[in-house]
Amino acid sequence: MICVGTGNNGSGNLHTQGRLGQGETAEIEFSVSAYEPVLNVQLWKGYTDDMEIYLEAPWGQTAGPLSEQLGVQRYILGNTEILVYYGKPGPFQVTQEIYFDFIPRETYIGNGIWKIRLRGRRIREGIFYLWMPGGGVLNPGTGFYTPKAEETLTIPSTAAKAIAVGAYDSRLNTFADFSGRGGNGLSYPKPDLAAPGVNITAPVPGGGYGSFTGTSFATPFVTGAAALLMEFGIIRGRDPFLWGEKVKAYLRRGAQPLRGFEEYPNPEIGYGVLCVKESIP
Image (spheres, rainbow, N blue to C red):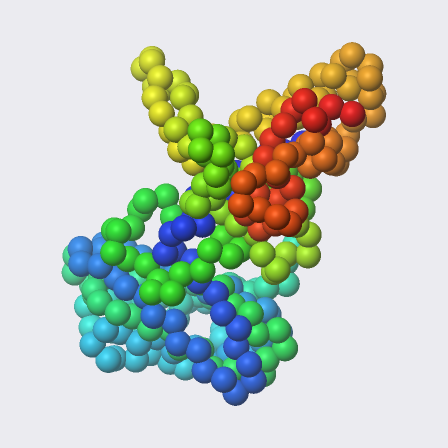
C-alpha cells in the first residue's frame, strides 16, 4: 500500500482550469514577475478536442495558431524564446499535454501579463487545465490571475490505488487551505482522508527538530496507521489477508468528520480525518 500527499497547491495561483465549447474562445491570463529566469506552463486537455492555441506577449506580439506536430516548435516573442511540445496519449491516460517552455534570450523572460487563447474547433469534452511548477521555484508575483483550487491534486496522489492524504490543522481542527483538492474530473473520490499537516515537529539535518507544514508531513501519519493495521491483522493473525485495498477501506471507514464539512467524501478531506482507533475492524 502506497500513501501519497496531495500536494500544497490548493490555495496557490499556479493552477487554473475551464471548459471550452464548440466555436467558443477562452483567454487565460497569467502574470510573469520581473527577474523571472525561466518558466514552464503545462496545458492539459482531452486528446479528442481540437483547439486553436495562441500565445500573446505583454507587448502585444502573438504566436499562433500553434501547429499540432511531433517535435519542438520554436517562437521568438521579444526578449523571450518559447519552445512548444505537443504530447500524445500515454499508457495510462487519454489526455494530451501541450508544454510551453519560456527561455530568456538574455537574462530574464519578458515580464507582464501573458495570455494563452484557446478556440474550440472540434470539441468533444472541452475541459482544460493549466499548471505552473510548484515548490517555490517561481517568484511570488508569477501565477494565474484566476486560479482554481479544484483538482489541484499532484501526481501520483491521483492514482486510484494509492491512499491520497490531505492536510488539516490539528490545533484548530480546521482544514489546511493549501492542501491539494480533488474534483469532478476524477471518476473516483480523492483524497481518501486527511491527517495533521500544520506545524509538525520533525527531525532536521544535522540534529535537532524543526516545525514543518505540508501534506508531506501529513502523509507519514497515515503511513504509520496503515503499518499498525497490517501488524494488527497480519502479524497478530486478526486478518491474515489484509491487502492494500482493505487497509484503505478500513482507514476510510474510521475517518472522522471535521468542522465545516457536511458531506463525505468531499474534495478537501475525502472521507474525513485520520482516526486509527475507529479504523480497527
